[in-house]
Image (cartoon, rainbow, N blue to C red; front, side, top):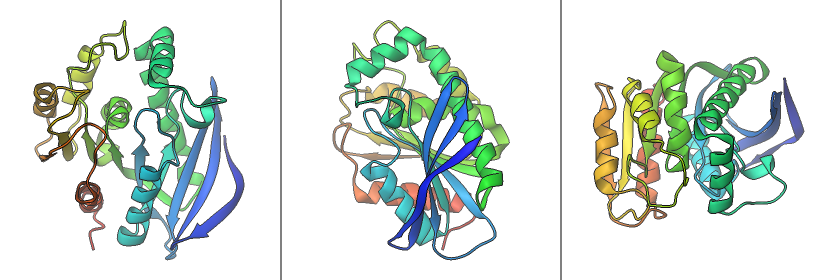
Length: 254
C-alpha cells in the first residue's frame, strides 16, 4: 500500500510529494517529483542516494529539478537501508555498514530491490508516471543497491547511470562481507544502456576495480566518463551528463 504524506509542495517549476510504502518488513519512505507542465504520464527515473545520504538530500533534489524542469521526466527516491526516515537518527558509515552486515548483505540487497519494485509498481497506479520503462541514476551506495535492481527488472530498465563503485573496496568497508561475487553476477545481467562514472583519484574504490566492473556490463551501449578528484567530488558537468544520458535513454532529450 502507498500512502501520501502531507500535501504536495510546488516550487521552482516542479511538485514534490512525500509518501510511504507499507510492506513487510516495514515502511519504505520516498519522495516523488513531477514536472509542472501537465502530461498524462511522465517517464520515470529512479534515484539512488549515496552512503550517509537520504531521499531528499541536495543531490537528489538537484537531479530531480534538472530531470523535471529540463527533460519533462518524473523522479522518485527512497531511503536506503538504515538511512533517512528508516532510522530515528542518522547513523555514521561504520554504524550503518555494521547493521547491514549483521542482517546479511545479500538479504539487505534483496530487501532493497523488493522495496524499489514495490514502490515502482504502486506509483504506476497512484501517480501520473509511466513505469513500463524506467531509468536509474545512482552512484556509490546508489550503485551498490542499484545494480541488483537493474539486474532484476531486466527489460523494464531503459538506461542506468552507475559509478564511484567497483570490485575493490577500502579495507574496513562492510567488514565481514565479501560483495564481489554478487556485484559480478548482477553487473553481467545488466543489458540496458549504461553510463559509468569514475572518480580518477577515488580513495574508497580502487580505479582498477571500477574499470573491471565497467567491463562486466554486457550492454552493447555502455559509456565511461572519468573526472579527476576524490570519491566525494562531483562536478556539475558530470551530473548534467547523467541527466542527458537518461533523458536520451527514455526518449526525452530536448
